[in-house]
Length: 337
Image (tube, rainbow, N blue to C red; front, side, top):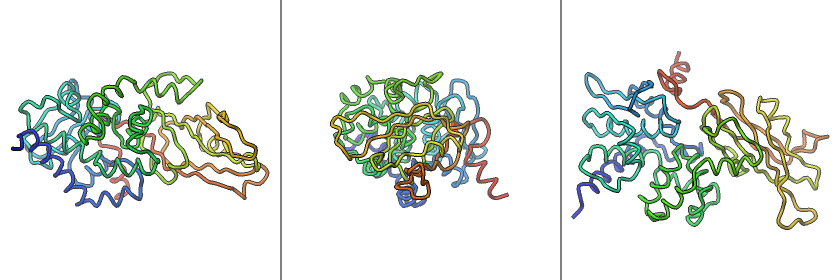
């Protein structure tokens, strides 16, 4: 016999899947190679959403006198996104109004090991997980990066996958448990490594003012992707460089676009072989609230027209969401004006 808790999980997951089909989201993300644009889709669904500095709350769903969503401005973008997806779940499932505080939603997110009896909240949690992190989207990003299930035992891999899904590191660890990709013990082992440790390792000798921002490790596998991050994020480019043929990655293109290059080195190879390409490692800080396309070419310095490779990635480092309408809602209104 299926337990009420399992039924609630199935109901929330099924509602998220139906919405994916309605929005043709899978086909869209296979092209965009990005995370689910939670705020953009809420705007597309004409569900009113406002952001406020809520005290003691992460978010709320209101249905009287009209339906609407509130999300706090006092948390990182990944938490804002999960909260918005949770509140959208309440809306899509025709739930009663709900106030979601930090103790409840973060403790449950996204797997409830002690479900209790708040099945409306279980349904909304399951919807949020299914909406933001469906199995097919995990599989898509893993395939694009060349990762397999065995790689999910490495905290650094899980951290980078969480960034590409727009989720927190902890939420993704427990999502793996829900999907039976790892065990609860393995999730707890992963959570022993805090994100700051992985950020420090990626940044090597560079030390930012703080570690509140994320650190993206970008390679040629991210070509054509869309990266959604926050204003204080950093990125590390790890690129194959054919310097043996005189080809170098053109850092001036980054600088001309306003990026600050804070690290530039060639990685030491375990076995250096004459004539083989090397690995260029570039650490860069985007300009304030950058939104646009990053382009960098691998070319000979004396002949930039004859490039060997080009890396193009669409970046949006304007998060987290601020008070008022979401960024997606404001942009859609400007485009319609």
